[in-house]
Image (tube, rainbow, N blue to C red; front, side, top):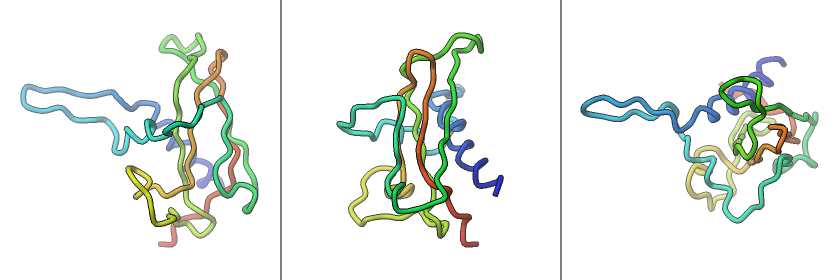
Amino acid sequence: MTHRYTFVFSIILTLSACGQQTSSANNTVNSCEGCKAYEEYGDKRLTSVDTLPDFDKNGPHILLTGTVFQYDRKTPAEDVILYIYHTNREGIYPKTGNEKGHAKRHGYLRGWVKTNERGDYAFYTFRPGAYPS
């Protein structure tokens, strides 16, 4: 059970580092796969709280919260966009069939928040299932 929660946390922590790049004379390497998925929220007005799709249809429910700080590790970071996605209860990234962008891989169980003035965020979702394999 603990590893499922760790999985959700690892997605947020990985994507919070997006945009960091290493350069060399001949190439530039992005630090994470799928980093631009955080930009796919479209016309949605982001707040510091989001509820992922199918929350009301699945359980057990979880509330994932946290605070983002600036590099000094003391000052709250306002207006940071966090992106989360996870599997359904069967361990699959479900799709509706008309996905675009990163939803083709991540499925529709995803959400976005923008940290408030205290750097806080919250996601309401359900516990994802483990990968079938």
